[in-house]
Length: 143
Length: 143
DNA sequence: ACACAGTTGCAATAGATTTGCGGATGCAAT
DNA sequence: ATTGCATCCGCAAATCTATTGCAACTGTGT
Image (cartoon, rainbow over all chains, first blue to last red; front, top):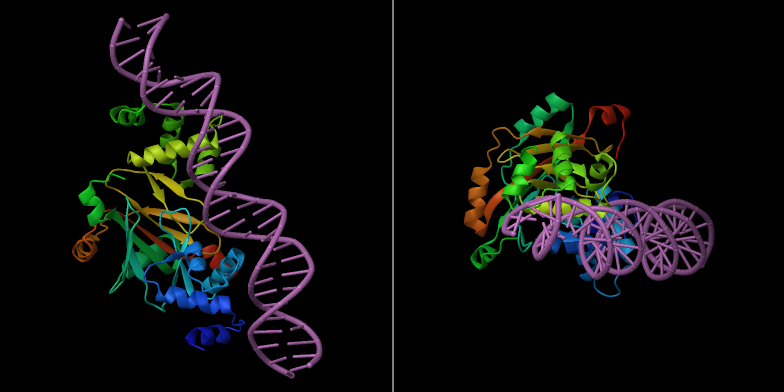
Protein backbone atom coordinates (compact mmCIF):
# COMPACT_ATOMS: atom_id res chain seq x y z
CA UNK A 1 0.00 0.00 0.00
CA UNK A 2 2.07 2.89 -1.23
CA UNK A 3 1.30 6.53 -0.78
CA UNK A 4 -0.93 6.29 -3.79
CA UNK A 5 -3.46 4.26 -1.91
CA UNK A 6 -3.09 6.63 1.00
CA UNK A 7 -3.86 9.64 -1.11
CA UNK A 8 -6.94 8.04 -2.62
CA UNK A 9 -8.24 6.76 0.66
CA UNK A 10 -7.69 10.13 2.26
CA UNK A 11 -9.83 11.64 -0.47
CA UNK A 12 -12.55 9.15 0.24
CA UNK A 13 -12.27 7.22 -3.02
CA UNK A 14 -12.11 3.47 -3.33
CA UNK A 15 -8.62 2.26 -4.11
CA UNK A 16 -8.73 0.10 -7.20
CA UNK A 17 -6.11 -1.63 -9.24
CA UNK A 18 -6.60 0.76 -12.14
CA UNK A 19 -5.98 3.80 -10.00
CA UNK A 20 -2.93 2.48 -8.26
CA UNK A 21 -1.38 1.39 -11.52
CA UNK A 22 -2.05 4.68 -13.24
CA UNK A 23 -0.39 6.61 -10.46
CA UNK A 24 2.53 4.23 -10.37
CA UNK A 25 3.05 4.25 -14.12
CA UNK A 26 2.81 8.01 -14.39
CA UNK A 27 5.18 8.46 -11.54
CA UNK A 28 7.74 6.19 -13.11
CA UNK A 29 7.53 7.88 -16.47
CA UNK A 30 9.87 10.77 -17.17
CA UNK A 31 7.48 11.95 -19.88
CA UNK A 32 3.79 12.72 -19.90
CA UNK A 33 1.85 9.77 -21.33
CA UNK A 34 -1.25 9.52 -23.48
CA UNK A 35 -4.17 7.41 -22.37
CA UNK A 36 -3.09 4.79 -24.87
CA UNK A 37 0.53 4.77 -23.70
CA UNK A 38 -0.75 4.32 -20.23
CA UNK A 39 -2.96 1.39 -21.06
CA UNK A 40 -0.13 -0.31 -22.91
CA UNK A 41 2.05 -0.19 -19.83
CA UNK A 42 -0.52 -1.85 -17.66
CA UNK A 43 0.40 -5.38 -16.67
CA UNK A 44 -2.19 -7.85 -18.02
CA UNK A 45 -5.09 -7.97 -17.83
CA UNK A 46 -5.28 -4.51 -19.32
CA UNK A 47 -8.21 -2.36 -18.33
CA UNK A 48 -10.73 -1.08 -20.83
CA UNK A 49 -9.91 2.26 -22.41
CA UNK A 50 -13.04 3.76 -20.89
CA UNK A 51 -11.82 2.84 -17.44
CA UNK A 52 -8.51 4.50 -18.06
CA UNK A 53 -10.23 7.68 -19.17
CA UNK A 54 -12.58 7.66 -16.24
CA UNK A 55 -9.78 7.20 -13.79
CA UNK A 56 -7.67 9.84 -15.39
CA UNK A 57 -10.59 12.24 -15.12
CA UNK A 58 -11.07 11.36 -11.48
CA UNK A 59 -7.42 11.53 -10.50
CA UNK A 60 -7.14 14.75 -12.35
CA UNK A 61 -10.08 16.28 -10.52
CA UNK A 62 -8.51 15.18 -7.25
CA UNK A 63 -5.34 16.94 -8.21
CA UNK A 64 -3.23 13.79 -8.29
CA UNK A 65 -2.77 13.88 -12.02
CA UNK A 66 -2.27 16.79 -14.35
CA UNK A 67 -3.09 16.96 -18.04
CA UNK A 68 -0.51 18.20 -20.47
CA UNK A 69 -1.48 19.83 -23.73
CA UNK A 70 1.19 19.52 -26.38
CA UNK A 71 0.24 20.16 -29.98
CA UNK A 72 -0.84 16.62 -30.54
CA UNK A 73 -4.03 14.86 -31.30
CA UNK A 74 -4.37 13.28 -27.89
CA UNK A 75 -3.90 14.63 -24.42
CA UNK A 76 -1.09 13.51 -22.17
CA UNK A 77 -1.03 13.07 -18.44
CA UNK A 78 1.62 13.29 -15.78
CA UNK A 79 1.75 12.73 -12.05
CA UNK A 80 1.15 15.95 -10.15
CA UNK A 81 3.92 16.40 -7.65
CA UNK A 82 2.57 18.97 -5.28
CA UNK A 83 3.82 22.45 -6.01
CA UNK A 84 6.51 21.22 -8.31
CA UNK A 85 5.81 21.12 -11.98
CA UNK A 86 7.67 20.60 -15.18
CA UNK A 87 8.22 22.38 -18.43
CA UNK A 88 8.86 20.62 -21.71
CA UNK A 89 10.63 20.84 -25.02
CA UNK A 90 9.07 19.21 -28.04
CA UNK A 91 10.79 18.55 -31.35
CA UNK A 92 8.67 19.90 -34.20
CA UNK A 93 9.85 17.29 -36.59
CA UNK A 94 10.05 13.97 -34.74
CA UNK A 95 7.88 14.73 -31.75
CA UNK A 96 10.55 13.80 -29.24
CA UNK A 97 9.78 15.23 -25.84
CA UNK A 98 12.09 16.21 -23.02
CA UNK A 99 10.80 17.37 -19.67
CA UNK A 100 12.63 19.19 -16.96
CA UNK A 101 11.68 20.45 -13.52
CA UNK A 102 10.69 24.09 -13.42
CA UNK A 103 13.19 25.30 -10.87
CA UNK A 104 12.76 28.84 -9.69
CA UNK A 105 9.97 29.27 -12.17
CA UNK A 106 8.91 32.75 -11.29
CA UNK A 107 5.92 33.95 -13.16
CA UNK A 108 4.34 35.56 -10.16
CA UNK A 109 4.65 38.99 -11.67
CA UNK A 110 2.81 37.91 -14.78
CA UNK A 111 0.18 36.23 -12.64
CA UNK A 112 -0.27 39.41 -10.68
CA UNK A 113 -0.75 41.34 -13.91
CA UNK A 114 -3.35 38.85 -14.94
CA UNK A 115 -5.23 39.26 -11.70
CA UNK A 116 -5.28 43.02 -12.15
CA UNK A 117 -6.19 43.08 -15.81
CA UNK A 118 -8.67 40.23 -16.05
CA UNK A 119 -9.59 39.42 -12.50
CA UNK A 120 -8.53 35.80 -13.01
CA UNK A 121 -7.06 33.95 -10.06
CA UNK A 122 -4.27 31.90 -11.58
CA UNK A 123 -3.73 28.50 -10.01
CA UNK A 124 -1.51 26.86 -12.54
CA UNK A 125 0.28 27.37 -15.81
CA UNK A 126 1.95 25.36 -18.49
CA UNK A 127 4.97 26.32 -20.48
CA UNK A 128 6.17 24.38 -23.49
CA UNK A 129 9.03 25.02 -25.84
CA UNK A 130 9.09 23.90 -29.45
CA UNK A 131 12.06 23.53 -31.69
CA UNK A 132 14.33 20.98 -33.30
CA UNK A 133 16.22 18.23 -31.57
CA UNK A 134 19.88 17.56 -32.44
CA UNK A 135 19.14 14.46 -34.55
CA UNK A 136 16.53 16.12 -36.70
CA UNK A 137 18.69 19.17 -37.13
CA UNK A 138 21.52 16.97 -38.36
CA UNK A 139 19.28 15.11 -40.78
CA UNK A 140 17.96 18.39 -42.04
CA UNK A 141 14.33 17.47 -41.50
CA UNK A 142 12.21 20.44 -42.10
CA UNK A 143 9.04 19.23 -40.49
CA UNK B 1 -5.66 41.79 -52.34
CA UNK B 2 -4.48 42.28 -48.79
CA UNK B 3 -1.11 41.31 -47.47
CA UNK B 4 -2.56 37.86 -46.99
CA UNK B 5 -2.62 37.24 -50.69
CA UNK B 6 0.84 38.70 -50.91
CA UNK B 7 2.21 36.33 -48.32
CA UNK B 8 0.69 33.29 -50.00
CA UNK B 9 1.81 34.32 -53.45
CA UNK B 10 5.28 35.00 -52.18
CA UNK B 11 5.38 31.46 -50.85
CA UNK B 12 4.31 30.12 -54.20
CA UNK B 13 0.87 28.93 -53.17
CA UNK B 14 -2.35 29.59 -55.02
CA UNK B 15 -4.44 32.25 -53.33
CA UNK B 16 -7.91 30.89 -52.77
CA UNK B 17 -10.98 32.20 -51.04
CA UNK B 18 -10.61 29.74 -48.21
CA UNK B 19 -7.10 30.81 -47.43
CA UNK B 20 -7.76 34.50 -47.57
CA UNK B 21 -10.79 34.18 -45.33
CA UNK B 22 -9.00 32.04 -42.78
CA UNK B 23 -6.21 34.55 -42.47
CA UNK B 24 -8.64 37.44 -42.27
CA UNK B 25 -10.87 35.77 -39.69
CA UNK B 26 -7.99 34.71 -37.50
CA UNK B 27 -6.46 38.11 -37.67
CA UNK B 28 -9.67 39.77 -36.61
CA UNK B 29 -10.20 37.42 -33.71
CA UNK B 30 -8.79 38.36 -30.32
CA UNK B 31 -8.92 34.69 -29.32
CA UNK B 32 -7.57 31.56 -30.91
CA UNK B 33 -10.35 29.75 -32.81
CA UNK B 34 -11.17 26.11 -33.36
CA UNK B 35 -11.65 24.76 -36.84
CA UNK B 36 -15.37 24.77 -36.22
CA UNK B 37 -15.41 28.37 -34.95
CA UNK B 38 -13.57 29.32 -38.06
CA UNK B 39 -15.94 27.65 -40.41
CA UNK B 40 -18.90 29.26 -38.69
CA UNK B 41 -17.46 32.70 -39.27
CA UNK B 42 -17.03 32.14 -42.97
CA UNK B 43 -19.45 34.13 -45.06
CA UNK B 44 -21.70 31.79 -47.08
CA UNK B 45 -21.14 29.56 -48.85
CA UNK B 46 -19.21 27.91 -46.07
CA UNK B 47 -16.34 25.68 -47.08
CA UNK B 48 -16.25 22.00 -46.23
CA UNK B 49 -14.66 21.13 -42.91
CA UNK B 50 -11.98 19.13 -44.71
CA UNK B 51 -10.98 22.20 -46.67
CA UNK B 52 -10.65 24.23 -43.52
CA UNK B 53 -8.41 21.60 -41.99
CA UNK B 54 -6.30 21.28 -45.08
CA UNK B 55 -5.81 24.99 -45.30
CA UNK B 56 -5.01 25.32 -41.66
CA UNK B 57 -2.38 22.64 -42.04
CA UNK B 58 -0.91 24.40 -45.03
CA UNK B 59 -0.94 27.88 -43.52
CA UNK B 60 0.52 26.48 -40.39
CA UNK B 61 3.38 24.78 -42.23
CA UNK B 62 4.05 28.07 -43.99
CA UNK B 63 4.28 29.80 -40.65
CA UNK B 64 1.31 32.09 -41.26
CA UNK B 65 -0.85 30.38 -38.68
CA UNK B 66 0.06 28.96 -35.31
CA UNK B 67 -1.74 26.21 -33.44
CA UNK B 68 -2.66 26.74 -29.83
CA UNK B 69 -2.98 23.81 -27.45
CA UNK B 70 -5.25 24.54 -24.54
CA UNK B 71 -6.57 21.66 -22.52
CA UNK B 72 -9.52 21.14 -24.79
CA UNK B 73 -10.68 18.48 -27.10
CA UNK B 74 -10.01 20.41 -30.25
CA UNK B 75 -7.07 22.47 -31.33
CA UNK B 76 -7.25 26.19 -31.79
CA UNK B 77 -5.50 28.40 -34.27
CA UNK B 78 -4.32 31.97 -34.32
CA UNK B 79 -2.68 34.25 -36.84
CA UNK B 80 1.07 34.21 -36.48
CA UNK B 81 2.24 37.78 -36.21
CA UNK B 82 5.91 37.55 -36.87
CA UNK B 83 7.98 37.59 -33.74
CA UNK B 84 5.10 38.72 -31.59
CA UNK B 85 3.11 36.13 -29.80
CA UNK B 86 0.50 35.92 -27.11
CA UNK B 87 0.00 34.22 -23.81
CA UNK B 88 -3.39 33.18 -22.47
CA UNK B 89 -5.44 32.69 -19.37
CA UNK B 90 -8.10 30.01 -19.36
CA UNK B 91 -10.85 29.62 -16.78
CA UNK B 92 -10.90 26.07 -15.48
CA UNK B 93 -14.57 26.13 -14.86
CA UNK B 94 -16.26 27.94 -17.76
CA UNK B 95 -13.50 27.76 -20.34
CA UNK B 96 -13.43 31.50 -20.89
CA UNK B 97 -10.21 32.56 -22.56
CA UNK B 98 -8.35 35.84 -22.43
CA UNK B 99 -5.27 36.48 -24.49
CA UNK B 100 -2.68 39.16 -24.08
CA UNK B 101 0.45 40.12 -25.98
CA UNK B 102 3.62 38.74 -24.48
CA UNK B 103 5.47 41.95 -23.94
CA UNK B 104 9.03 41.66 -22.81
CA UNK B 105 8.60 37.93 -22.66
CA UNK B 106 12.12 36.95 -21.81
CA UNK B 107 12.66 33.28 -21.67
CA UNK B 108 15.96 33.44 -23.45
CA UNK B 109 17.79 32.20 -20.40
CA UNK B 110 15.62 29.13 -20.19
CA UNK B 111 16.00 28.55 -23.90
CA UNK B 112 19.75 28.76 -23.52
CA UNK B 113 19.61 26.16 -20.74
CA UNK B 114 17.60 23.92 -23.01
CA UNK B 115 20.13 24.21 -25.78
CA UNK B 116 22.91 23.24 -23.40
CA UNK B 117 21.13 20.40 -21.68
CA UNK B 118 19.25 18.78 -24.52
CA UNK B 119 20.76 20.24 -27.64
CA UNK B 120 17.36 21.45 -28.81
CA UNK B 121 17.19 24.65 -30.82
CA UNK B 122 14.10 26.38 -29.51
CA UNK B 123 12.13 28.31 -32.09
CA UNK B 124 8.92 28.92 -30.25
CA UNK B 125 7.12 28.42 -26.99
CA UNK B 126 3.67 28.59 -25.57
CA UNK B 127 2.68 29.72 -22.13
CA UNK B 128 -0.81 29.31 -20.76
CA UNK B 129 -2.22 30.18 -17.38
CA UNK B 130 -5.15 28.37 -15.81
CA UNK B 131 -7.34 29.56 -13.01
CA UNK B 132 -10.77 30.92 -12.24
CA UNK B 133 -12.42 33.91 -13.80
CA UNK B 134 -14.22 36.46 -11.63
CA UNK B 135 -17.72 35.23 -12.54
CA UNK B 136 -17.03 31.61 -11.74
CA UNK B 137 -15.29 32.55 -8.54
CA UNK B 138 -18.34 34.54 -7.48
CA UNK B 139 -20.70 31.70 -8.35
CA UNK B 140 -18.50 29.34 -6.43
CA UNK B 141 -18.13 26.89 -9.27
CA UNK B 142 -15.66 24.26 -8.33
CA UNK B 143 -14.90 22.80 -11.67
C1' DA C 1 -20.75 -12.01 5.67
C1' DC C 2 -23.96 -7.84 4.33
C1' DA C 3 -25.46 -3.64 2.11
C1' DC C 4 -24.33 0.27 -0.78
C1' DA C 5 -21.85 3.32 -3.28
C1' DG C 6 -18.77 3.58 -6.48
C1' DT C 7 -16.29 0.77 -10.40
C1' DT C 8 -15.48 -1.86 -14.43
C1' DG C 9 -15.96 -4.02 -19.11
C1' DC C 10 -18.48 -3.76 -23.28
C1' DA C 11 -20.90 -1.84 -26.83
C1' DA C 12 -22.63 2.18 -28.79
C1' DT C 13 -21.89 7.22 -29.56
C1' DA C 14 -20.09 11.60 -30.18
C1' DG C 15 -16.84 14.86 -32.01
C1' DA C 16 -12.47 16.03 -34.31
C1' DT C 17 -9.43 15.08 -38.07
C1' DT C 18 -7.85 12.85 -42.10
C1' DT C 19 -7.99 10.71 -46.68
C1' DG C 20 -9.46 9.17 -51.49
C1' DC C 21 -11.37 10.79 -55.56
C1' DG C 22 -13.31 13.27 -59.46
C1' DG C 23 -14.67 17.70 -60.75
C1' DA C 24 -13.40 22.81 -60.35
C1' DT C 25 -10.02 26.65 -59.96
C1' DG C 26 -5.66 29.52 -59.75
C1' DC C 27 -1.86 30.88 -62.39
C1' DA C 28 1.73 31.21 -65.71
C1' DA C 29 2.61 30.94 -70.49
C1' DT C 30 0.55 31.57 -74.86
C1' DA D 1 -8.89 35.55 -73.46
C1' DT D 2 -7.39 30.54 -73.94
C1' DT D 3 -4.81 26.51 -72.66
C1' DG D 4 -2.31 23.26 -69.64
C1' DC D 5 -1.07 21.67 -65.39
C1' DA D 6 -0.64 21.72 -60.53
C1' DT D 7 -3.23 22.44 -56.84
C1' DC D 8 -7.77 22.98 -54.65
C1' DC D 9 -12.45 21.94 -53.21
C1' DG D 10 -16.64 19.39 -51.83
C1' DC D 11 -18.39 14.99 -50.59
C1' DA D 12 -18.41 10.67 -48.49
C1' DA D 13 -16.05 7.35 -45.95
C1' DA D 14 -12.63 6.17 -42.68
C1' DT D 15 -9.78 7.08 -38.35
C1' DC D 16 -9.03 8.31 -33.79
C1' DT D 17 -9.76 10.05 -29.37
C1' DA D 18 -12.89 10.45 -25.74
C1' DT D 19 -17.51 9.85 -23.54
C1' DT D 20 -21.78 7.56 -21.96
C1' DG D 21 -25.46 3.93 -20.72
C1' DC D 22 -26.02 -0.31 -18.50
C1' DA D 23 -25.65 -4.49 -15.90
C1' DA D 24 -22.41 -7.11 -13.35
C1' DC D 25 -18.69 -6.70 -9.92
C1' DT D 26 -15.57 -4.81 -6.18
C1' DG D 27 -14.11 -1.83 -2.23
C1' DT D 28 -15.45 -0.30 2.35
C1' DG D 29 -17.57 0.32 6.60
C1' DT D 30 -20.63 -2.30 9.88
